Length: 344
Length: 177
Ligand code: SF4
Image (tube, rainbow over all chains, first blue to last red; front, side):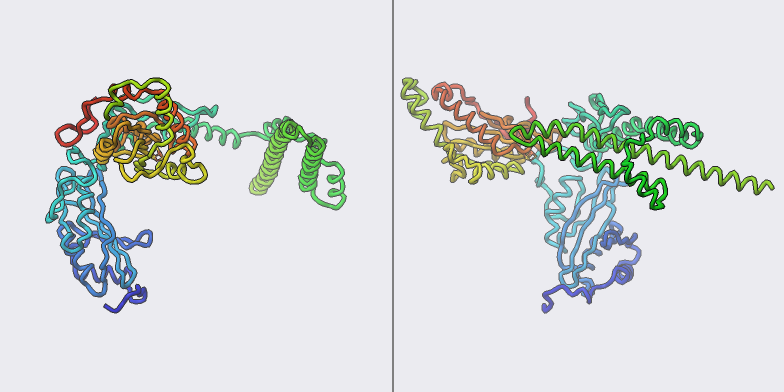
């Protein structure tokens, strides 16, 4: 009884633990995984008790602290029971997992209350929520968390919620699904639509599929359009949205060009300078307006500046699009040249 | 209750009597979930409902005039609320604080949550919100005080539901409508 602090240096690595457990438990071990820094040992139901006993009594493992025990609904395969143990002498944690016998109808699992007293109420809770019978438990009834006369096993995936049967789940799953115009899609639920979590999952998945299908198609179309889009089309949009020269700070533009910068850089820098100027002007106006009616002045100034920002953003996008089109054209030319060479 | 529920007090006396009652509400906090935190916030110095004459944290239900149920009431807990309510002496008032206590709130479809504390005990004031702000509780308290000021104790006692709601194994919980 000398060790007080956990000694990680004496702890077995997951590989060593696995080798040890496989050696002692033989073919009761179904598998092991290391996920999220937790070593999980899956054992057959028959070896459940032996595994817990071994984990506690084997000096190399010394899992002396019982952490928690819970049930898992494995749908068609039945139910799993998971126990988490901790070793205060090595600081290791282990997760034991087993599949209950008896399928969905009568899941049973050996109790480990005689190994860990702390498992008592955890097993009662698991019984409450999943209806898993723990053989050898001192007394699972009366029910611990639900009212004594509760019927059913509420954490089973096929448990039907009475309120949900009477009143279906309203609305759509978050994040809100939107149609093309950005309106929230309203689902009209039917009575009995999704009486339990499992059905709700299914209903929502279906709904999401229905909602998202057209959006995907649209995206694909867009792509196709872009790909087949001729230079002419690109130019057409260009003409529409290309920034008029007045949007540039001519001074900066010319200076940069004179300095030998490329036209593109000069253009973008000049634009930035222009926007900066505009902002400065707006701010100056603000300051001038400041006074007793400061809020009013602010509001009035806010409008144009927001609009301006939007404008600037639009311009920038147009610019980017044009640049891309140019690049593509250059690429096409290159390719064309390559083709010719090959032909020759 | 003695004579109070037998005779109607003359109006001026009733006014003074009710005025005294409404500013000395010993409050019994039935904190069950997150809303209880807001209740506590309402009782501390920033919102301070003592200035409205609500004295928080009565020693027990037998010393309390006002029961504030704040939080999620489960079917398992419902009998206790019922029982503590019945331990309170008349005249007694109930504020249901928060969506959970009002109607089940976010747990409207839960298997274990009572869909409103008014299924178990009569409620005077409902404070909506999830959780309601402490100011909302102050508002609820003032509404309740307005009610107390204008009421006749005789009528209140007469209007009380006398047959208790039975809870327990022989009567299924919260399922009879
Ligand atoms: S109403 Fe909201 S905040 Fe209040 S107890 Fe219920 S869940 Fe918690």
